[in-house]
Length: 308
Image 1 (cartoon, one colour):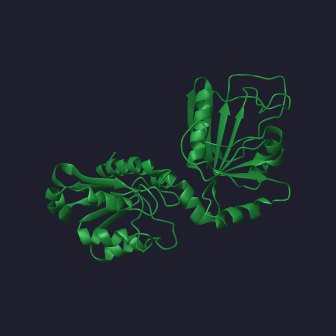
Image 2 (spheres, rainbow, N blue to C red):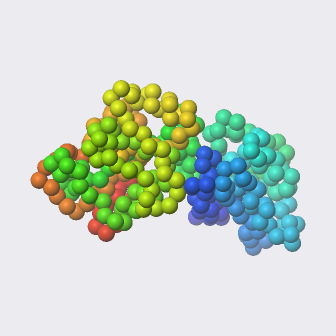
Image 3 (cartoon, rainbow, N blue to C red):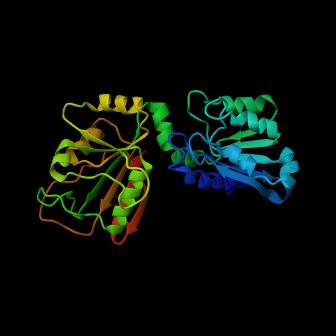
């Protein structure tokens, strides 16, 4: 791992702390490094929407005696510095004002009012700018934000639990497949996403609460999909309401309707070491999936799939 990659990795670690507070803004981390002994003299992340961005917080953390080091310093930022006035002034202007020598950017911001303008502004005043360090990792961190702005729909997570022999219920009746640990993780996921959807049949049969009662944070917006609600119209409605991420926890038919429409970005399948005599078969994974990660939680296996 290069020096630039090492500090960008730290930016990503910092940024992840804003997963709840930064929404609907992206998660961003920033690290300021002085050339002398590669000393970190400042770091920060975007804590809460409407408050200081990562760069602002990083500069604010620099001790007065280290200010003199800024003229030769490098600032690492996981996402391109903003160049427009929103709820806060442009971070690109602040970087220029602070007089740093070099800026390393993880990835370009897809937001229409940025999209390379922050990078251009820095280059125009003679600051050295490096773009694309750990780019895939930085984009994965803000996959919800990127999907929302590029595709004008929420980032979609299909999620189901199944038995070892591939059923999602027991002869048509719902039963507990998740264990205590994976149930907690499921509620953590709910706290991190904007909305959660089930089909009409699941809603009537199971009356799911769809809350974060085993975690902490806000409950996601609850959506029930009916036969009279086409998916393209639903995507448009969610986009217009600023919903950047959606968990789908319905039954087989609901999941397969999303898969057939190509409306998915991530699939999370939990498999428990139990079998049943029959029931509803689990959805069939779509073509073109790859395993992104796999973890075991007290014998239950959670596999996360992503598109190729």
